[in-house]
Structure formats: C-alpha cells, structure tokens
Image (cartoon, rainbow, N blue to C red; front, side):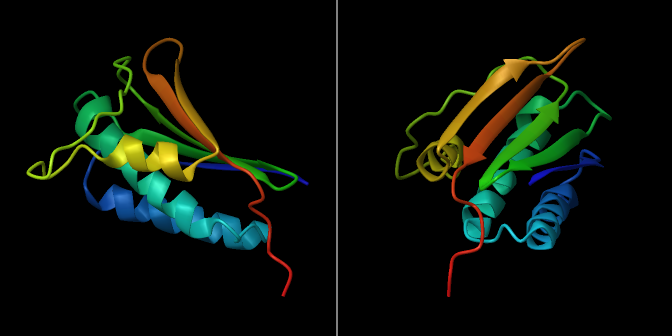
Length: 133
C-alpha cells in the first residue's frame, strides 16, 4: 500500500490541533493506527515549532503524510531555513522539549532545505499498521 495526503494550515495556534486531527483522520482511514499516538504527538511538536520558529509572517505550514507498507513518514514544511536543533531543557524551562520527544518517539527524523525557500522537518515511524487482536 502506498498512500499520501497533505493539508495546508494557517499560522495560528488553532492549526496545531487541526494538524493533529488531520493526522488522526488520515491514519485511521488508511488503517495505520498502531503508532497513532506517537505520530500525533510528533505532529503537535513539529507544527508548534513551525508556527513559533519556522513561518515568516502570514505564511502557514504544510503537513504531509506518506505511507508505504507499515512505515509512515510525517513531514512539516515551513518557510524559514533555520534548522531545528534538539536541546536539553532544564527543570525551569517551560518549553524546549519538542525535538527531544520527536527523536525518542520516531524511528528517524531530520530536516532538509526546501526550494525556493524554507525547510521540511520529517519523522518516520515503522510498524504503523494495525496490530493483530
């Protein structure tokens, strides 16, 4: 099975929840729900990073899902080239843990430049298909 879907989201806080809903609906429709919680958490983190750090004023972000066999690739496209760097947040930090979560939940992740501007931050999840009852 090879599937793909994408949706554009405006640069506003409500778009993070809308991106989570898009991921859930898409994965359920494809029958790839074994890792849905991990993928939903990662899209929340990546969409939030795109909103806060990755979008130029009045630009939104694109969330893309692709599935082949039981592997799901999640991509968040934004309009800035600044590459994300995971960091260790202190106990007092109220933010800064998102990429550490993505790195621990995904089977792989990275960032690449997008032409003519911006970047794609991606993560992959193996064995995303339904688990046997």
